[in-house]
Every structure is written in structure tokens, then in C-alpha cells.
Image 1 (spheres, rainbow, N blue to C red):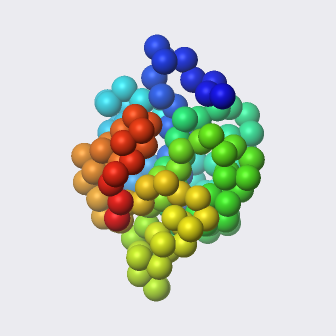
Image 2: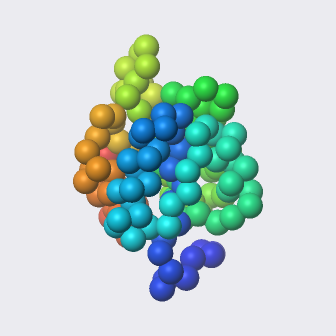
Length: 136
């Protein structure tokens, strides 16, 4: 059951440990009509999900504290209806390994960093509108 009213903007939780990336995502998504909340790591994201409903979580994979794969696993267990977009620039082993793992544990779409704002919007729109044909 969705908690979202079709007349209200879709709610997106964007999770990334880099301030500049969070800020750009917020500007991009709000300009496109989404209701956006930000979190700097998985622990903060889980706390926000515990308090309010989100249609979609877009999460970086490589983060301090609670990283993305662990966050995706917990979201899938506790909020299976929430759409998940995994984002990764890689780290030491490269983005493909992280994104493959994220897909395996429940992310429905993947986006490789660096991405253009239009690519982020397309991935989120695709997930929320049921056209999840894009992948990394």
C-alpha cells in the first residue's frame, strides 16, 4: 500500500556523504517537483525513514558510518515498497562491483558517478513512474 497521494509530489530521500553532491541533487530534484530530504549516511537515512514515508531512496554506496549496501538491505527488509536507486563512483574496487552488489541486495536501478543531473532525474522518474529500463 502506498502512503503517497497522487496529487502530492513524490518524496525522495537522497543519501550521500558529500555535501556538494547532496546540494546539487536537492536543487535538481526540487526544480523537477520532487519533495526532497537529505541524509549524509545510511544511519541518518534509516532514522528519517523510521519517521516519515518516502517513495524513493537514492543512496551512495561508499560512505562512512553506515554504507549503502547495508542501508539497502535494511530498507528492503523494513520498507519493501520503497524504490531504491544506488549511486556509486567506486572507491578502490571500482563502481561496477559495488553497483552489482547493490542490485543483488535490492536496488532496482543503478547510476554510475559522475552522472549528469538529467541522468539522475531520468533514473528517479523511471523508477517512480514504473519505467525502470535504465541501468548502469
